[in-house]
Amino acid sequence: MSRAYNFCAGPAALPIAVLERASAEMVDWRNKGLSLMEMSHRHKDVVEVCKKAELDLRELMNIPENYKVMFMQGGASSQFAMIPLNLANKSGKVDQIVTGQWSRKAHAEGKRFADVNLAATTADNNFTSAPAQADLNLSADADYVHYCPNETIGGVAFDYIPETGDVPLVADLSSAILSEPLDVSKFGMIYAGAQKNIGPAGLCVVIVREDLIGNAQAITPTMMDYKVCADADSMYNTPPTYSWYLSGLVFEWLKEQGGVEAIAEINRRKAKALYDFIDGNDFYANPVAVNNRSIMNVPFTLADSNLDKLFLQESEAAGLLNLAGHRSVGGMRASIYNAVPEQAVTALIEFMADFARRNG
Ligand code: PMP
Image 1 (cartoon, protein in one colour):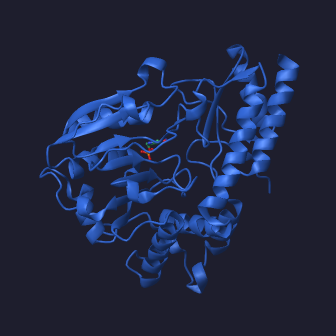
Image 2 (cartoon, protein in one colour; image 1 turned 45 degrees about the vertical axis):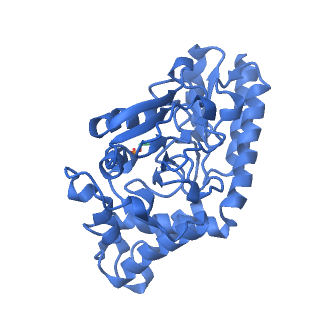
């Protein structure tokens, strides 16, 4: 068996221990004589697996009791509509902060279902920084403020949690969930597509304060109503049980690693090593303001973009996969999520140094 190092932004690397366990359990799940993915989602053992995943996530993130945790479908992108449908229900006004492609998409979709104020954008500097608190043009009567703490494509992260007073703060944490400790009580809602730090694609984890649920706009489709989902423990219809189970295995793995604090330390070390290397080498560059550099997604460019193709060919041949930047921005990007081991970053830096020596 050979395992390459996978730097994909999502679907992303999964811990090898999780894949091996899932593989061992695949055909005959816990002596039941069938695979978990062939079992009814109403079977008590499946319900238990799903419940355990929720409890482990609650423990890992220290989620307060007055928050619902839901495992929804439709990816993080569907939340761009579900959030205004469910939460823009008092003044109908919302504030959105735009710092990259994902919060921009959320902003565009939000406008279809709410009266949206663009509270700040860093489009002017090509999304290479996050705005300061003082630059947020927030409305006192907004139903919520939406932002993306970690923009996956630009590799731009907030270095603070916006202060929004009594207005609930909603965060698209798709590419940063479980990467560092976070005070969930500062948020009205957090959501994250699973396919980066949680598990396989097919799920979106939604963590929402209970008092915000139950007042969806009348046009909200049943499947998009948080109350319907919460009341049915995320099983109003058939959920992607196998993705849910695998996410549960990832949560167990993360607990075995020492939890979020322990993995955060490794994550910071990995990111520092890569940024230090990029900054210390004229051949590579990262355009993001130093305070706003993501520890999960590290975009970088080569001094001569004519070498991009060769870089990608050679890195792939060296077992370093998926280093191409997002198709909308080009260049390179190394996504170094929880399941990407430190050795992968070391191997990447060694490759980059060697490539620069040969082509610089
Ligand atoms: N938000 C962010 C920050 C993302 O990185 C992504 C996916 N890369 C999305 C939203 C969209 O997620 P999905 O594909 O699950 O809809």
